[in-house]
Length: 98
Image (cartoon, rainbow, N blue to C red; front, side, top):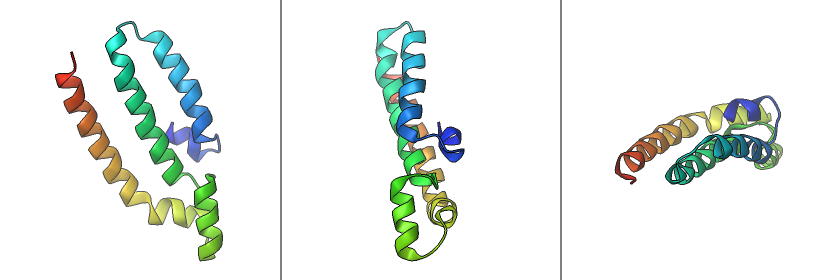
């Protein structure tokens, strides 16, 4: 999802497409919540990291720099840390989910 947003596909569209495919492919109903949280995590990181997102374009215009600088340099470390924390949360949630 993050890779799709980096090549120019809007994160919301990728959430819809990937989510529809994953939910229809998964049989156990209790994994739908975990899939939704994974999509939410990917969507948040896509909106923060993508130089094509509206908030990144607005910040770049106000700061008078390129959207790539805002997306990659300013938000890059935050995105990596947030992704790792999100993975840890999802792993713990999956272990205790029944």
